[in-house]
Length: 179
Image (cartoon, rainbow, N blue to C red; front, top):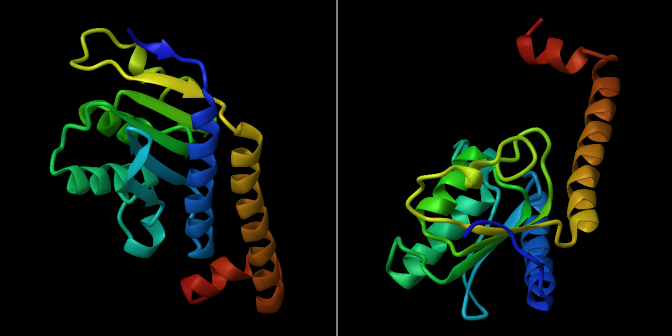
């Protein structure tokens, strides 16, 4: 069985915890995405975006949470575990979630640009996969979406202030190129 699964009271609690991790990412200048792996109502893995700090494309919140859970459970098989993440996973993360045997994926905001569960692609609708992942979309979607939108709004404002200090629109790029 695969596909959309209804949200529970626990889902809202754990998504709020994922939002706290997303705020940690934002404080570090990272896109605010947080993730937790839960087994038997206990967090066994946590993660937040670290791509800018590490300069590694794979440092997504979901992968960090999966790695933490694998370490803590001494197994790459995360049978019976659920993953909570504030933004719909990309193709890379959706594949890792499926390979880790996550029972259920719960996410907040949908991602129309790179969402691989139901927005852009429908990864878990493929037949013949060795594991089916149940999923729930839209848990605290408004506040998860606002967290990301606010981050990018502040980033744009900061970029405008920097450009004004450097001499107007496009000055950041000219300055970075050494012109």
